[in-house]
Length: 172
Ligand code: ATP
Ligand code: MG
Image (tube, rainbow, N blue to C red; front, side, top):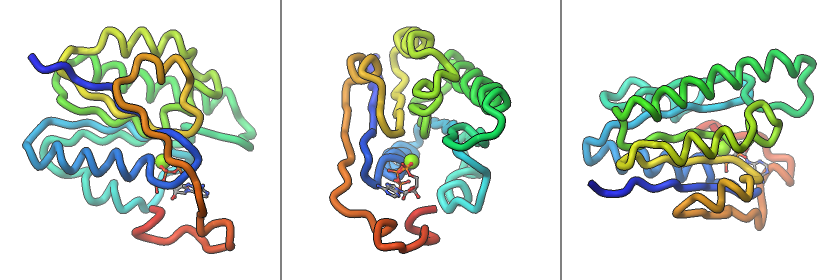
């Protein structure tokens, strides 16, 4: 059986999640079975969700309030993140998938909603064939160590810095 990869897209530039969804499109094009768990701040009108969610062979879970920087209720955020993590673990353990995207997952260990060692154990015990893509800023060095492919998106410029608001179809 072919070894599945652990792929990380990290860094402060744009393109971490969208590159993961590019691989997702590629995998679906080959009829592979894929799943996504998205740890996003708030549910919203995301183009990628509309596009991918109801496709055959994609299971998509959105975990709202999965990361935070000005939350008034960290305990609640932690509980939501933990539920999302459990969903991800079940998907990993099920051995039903060829590809899983865990989008913005780095935040849940960076905020210590889940301890990094617990996550590393799950990844080390993943089914052999499973490919997993992890996205988010500041990927933990322990994650980088066990990954096969790690890319840092580096910001050279971002339109937000000139005050251009998030654009439909580009940012969401
Ligand atoms: P994308 O989803 O466009 O691939 P990303 O996953 O690399 O971006 P995140 O850190 O998840 O980036 O950012 C979430 C949102 O902020 C996205 O709408 C993204 O386009 C935007 N963004 C990405 N990088 C930056 C940046 N350096 N400054 C401001 N906004 C950014
Ligand atoms: Mg992202």
